[in-house]
Length: 504
Image (cartoon, rainbow, N blue to C red; front, side, top):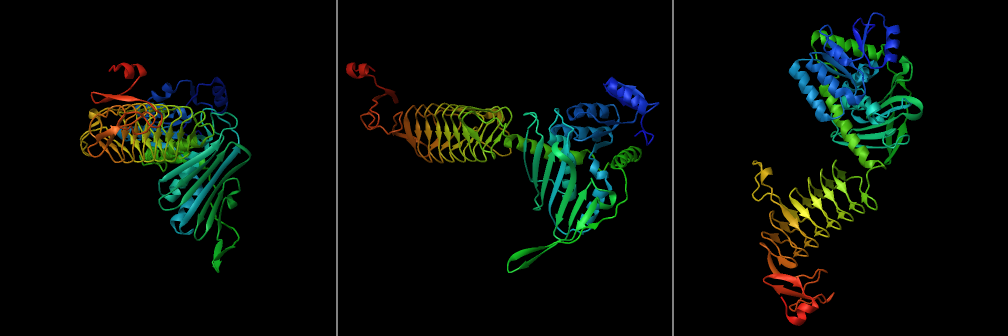
């Protein structure tokens, strides 16, 4: 910006930086507080190059003060906040540009031109390596530090937002900060993207590979300008059902040398003057931010440091939202989703494709089999069994077009109760302790303790022992010999004193 004659003031909290900047840029004002810049009417636009965690507040303040903004990547740390900034820029009529630097590199622009022109044919996959030894950070992991550039390029070249995002990595220096990540992007067109980033690598590498059906392209930013972008017209032939590779010599693509950072700064200044939309505007940055957030969620799940319950396990395809707590010894299987503020007790088993929450309490020792959804308003006490595809509701008379959140009815399933496959528990009714609901039954009223109920609507046809055996007419369990008595439609365990003296 100084070389372009646009630098008015530098704001930095570090006295050491002030000394360095004063020596390098004579005549430029130096201040310690960003507010001095944002409140200065002589300044039309600002460049924000600060830690990512500060971006939202600084960009928001700058836009509200009527400044055009160029902010380093990422736009901010949450897509919801990013959307607010995009909307604020629109409301205030200000320019919002994000420093996705590679979109100002002649090689990337030429590569996009080749793809649009069909020179590579239909794309198959794009892979990107951004590797280095340092600079090591603690305020953000390598995914957020390195990968925004590559995600921006891949999404821009494909022209789509990925349908599926998966990331894995490792934290080797600081267990809370990933040093190495591999992110996989799957697009609806079938194109795949792979982003490998590391700041713990023996050498520096910045390489993008684009594989098309006709040609392959390699952008290697470490090479001289005459070799930065090369095409490989490799071919594959088939004989007797066996593919054979036919390698070809690399073809350098002529480029006009230019410094991407200078191009980026010039583009921002031109947008400020002409009020045109930047190539990397807030909307483009928001698409990248959405992918980063999804990658971060995947990374947290796949990490070895994921909060696996002691003695239990959470499958890598399961989703555990922030605020959910999982008890020791609990196992959660494939594709299940535990929503926020949900509590699951110790030694539970959650089967495949189960959804629980938000704000649901599950007791200890519960077993919830496949394809069960437990909604807000439902509570399971200890040792409850839920058979496959049993159904809970939380609204009595649902309509798709009528909000009913203030009409949720509570349902409590008490200790030891069992619910058969495909049974339906209509909300607002309690299932008593050790009750047994037959497969396919529909519960439309409270179920007493130890009752065996079947049918639609469900009716009691007998009694069940706590151990799970159906009681005979004398109410003495043939399995565990426990004796019961029926009093006014309820079942109670008999004691030897009550039996001997006929006490109710």
